[in-house]
Image 1 (cartoon, rainbow, N blue to C red):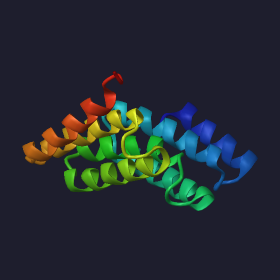
Image 2 (image 1 turned 30 degrees about the vertical axis):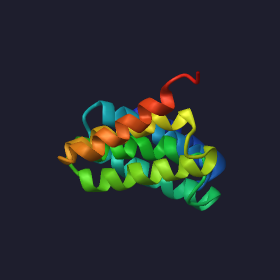
Image 3 (image 1 turned 60 degrees about the vertical axis):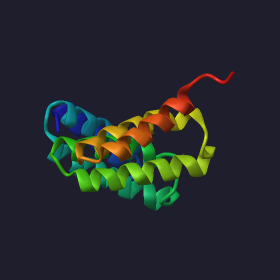
Length: 142
């Protein structure tokens, strides 16, 4: 983690405590930086910590999880752990569907990411089905 990002996390921990959801957001920001710098293992450790904080504070199906789970899935894909990434995409989609319903357009980006990951596992048919659903949801209503 970069020194300034680490300092931001330290300040939030000192001010709010280690289990505060704002700390989870700061950890997520640092993880995004690490993932973009091709350090997926560091990103994963930070994201896992952030997810535990959010699950403890708000429960395992809360709306704040997908923004933290998404980079975790992407980091797992980057390091080749497609099985874990697929499980995370499934969880993200399930959380979002629980919030907005099965046919809401906000699911489309998650489904597209899920399709890419599924394709990387060699499941072209599964990826095509996810892409078709994403396209249907993203299409403007007539």
